[in-house]
Image (tube, rainbow over the protein chains, first blue to last red):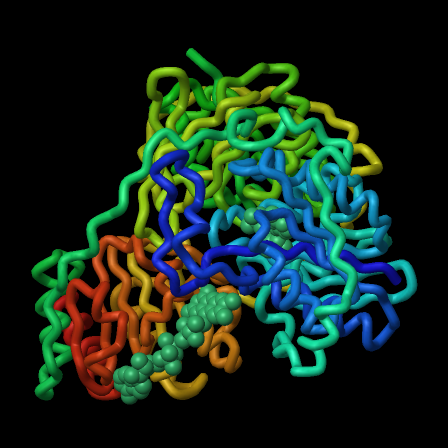
Length: 259
Length: 320
Ligand SMILES: Cc1cc2nc3c(=O)[nH]c(=O)nc-3n(C[C@H](O)[C@H](O)[C@H](O)COP(=O)(O)OP(=O)(O)OC[C@H]3O[C@@H](n4cnc5c(N)ncnc54)[C@H](O)[C@@H]3O)c2cc1C
Ligand SMILES: Nc1ncnc2c1ncn2[C@@H]1O[C@H](COP(=O)(O)O)[C@@H](O)[C@H]1O
């Protein structure tokens, strides 16, 4: 089996994230960047199939030069090889454009299965699995809390607002996973050493047959007009419970007309 | 007036509150046409009229609901081509965003997700989003195609206003390509009887400090006294103390109620991402250093097993 895992590099969860005032894109220069937390679960799910059914796992990332760090992490967890789409023309691309680039890259790899995280923690749109399915014409098995591959059929538990749906599709398929699905492994020392020798191929938009003028900030389908950093919330009242804590809260709620 | 398509979210024709919010918002921006896909329109009609739908496009085909996202995106794409609406509104729910995503690719249009407000500005609609866990507010526009905006539940107060809800039947042939992810079974795990988390005006959430599945009863009792929905931190859903659908946070639900009560929750960044925009926040935690207090309008440093039952009693007696 041939598996592609889409992995994005994002500002560290704990970093103070901001937009670059120059062009209103996510500021990736002044913060630590790491693998999108949710993509670790996608990598882990692919590695589990690699171990149980035999599969070649390819990491696919679209992002600036520095994203190689994230790619190396995925390789040191146990992925076999990686494709890094890197091109100055891509700076500021919107989700629709990103999906075009990733879809072209995926097509060139002819996988049986594509894994994604459910959401990137910077842009956080939760749309990429749906967009890639639409472009590739493959089943959308998104928001999965459980994945089973049996021959050419993939069955997932798709988490919904009030439970889950059992959803089935045929390979090749697009699967996005939630963080409930597994416990991502840490790279071992051996894994880290091995990762250094694993193949990492770089591709430009031209290599993928994408017109450079159709991607990037200038051609994006959405534009940020302005952004404001919200002032930190004014400190509230914190009291210590002296046996009347519940009553104090009730008084506060009454003063705010909640009760 | 410009026509605005509003995708109706419903279960067998029982219309979700977010749809009423979207209709209300659409009325401020143009003339709303609801798009109803699936069965049960008879149950939905009166509600859609009450909240101001001028028209309703009804695609009464159960197959629209038997596959993930794609059939509804095809329906909307057909309507976009036929009616040339000025805007398409979908709810920022799992399904709504995915339908919007596919529609964006089909129509070459821009999509804005998780909008908390939408107004008419010069040169088109301007959406407001609250990003990076609520620390930054951005205004954005769609610059290509028919704007598609996914609005967060609880971002517009629904207001009734009579509409015609003139029914226009839509016939659609779902392509084979849209039938690739088949829904074989729907399993409902929701604990019944309480308001839905994303729709509730008050949410009471329990965290690891609650200690066990049984003790979640303390949280439920307070929620019931307040008429609130029950939420949970990931520590609680991971431990199996409460269903995953009740998780609040980055990988759970985003809530924005009038009042959020956090009980035994430390306030990790992933939790805050899902509740930071609540209007008023109350926290009970025995650790004075817990980050949740940075957000709280009112906090009590104390043992939740003392504070919460007392609060529940007080609420009950004050409400009479
Ligand atoms: C990819 C990823 C996604 C995540 N998504 C989410 C998400 O969507 N939602 C989410 O909530 N978390 C999420 N998390 C987890 C998050 O990082 C925290 O681990 C989690 O929120 C902690 O839950 P908690 O506050 O209940 O537990 P803890 O952090 O353990 O806090 C428990 C609190 O209870 C207090 N306490 C204990 N006993 C008592 C008592 N008797 N009386 C009063 N107070 C008491 C303690 O002082 C402590 O502050 C995510 C993590 C990752 C890595
Ligand atoms: N630039 C990118 N490169 C590789 N994968 C991506 C990229 N952007 C998004 N993804 C994948 O799509 C998922 C959902 O992202 P999003 O729709 O942006 O919230 C992520 O968890 C990744 O798996």
